[in-house]
Length: 207
Ligand SMILES: [Zn+2]
Ligand SMILES: [Zn+2]
Image (cartoon, rainbow, N blue to C red; front, side):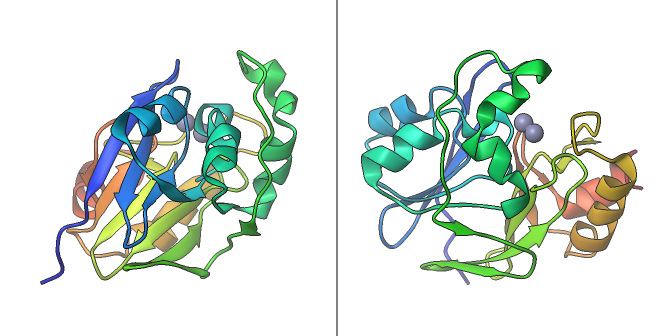
């Protein structure tokens, strides 16, 4: 048996966005960085050794730059969201409520890449449609996914923002997520965790 992953969640900002902290052999992985994440990291006393951004929307990258600077850690995201991450002001017309500091990547992640953060190996699934650079991080051996805004408990990511597409989103979920085993846990960018089995059975968008 694999030991259960030690995962802490922080929810912050106007959009109630989830950040996740996963204990690694060496420090902690942070997945996304909504408003308040830098303070939460401080409060929890975590040393962040890697930061992954599931996509470039402002509610997920808000505190990314300060965290990357403080810990001098690698930052990973998909190339299709480079503009959102390096020029966040482009989202000003779509509800961006503040000046967000740009965050550069250390390395782009793409479909079928493996991101090894010992003891975990994440397979990268690129599932656009909510955002062009949306990625899910699938840890096959331990059976969990950091999903960002792709698939939620009973819902899917909105597709009405720039670069969004309902068709591409739904087909990506059907091709890349739903074939995974029932008991794989999804930790989404908003709302509670769920499982692949639950969503395949009950999610009205992808049934
Ligand atoms: Zn989003
Ligand atoms: Zn979001």
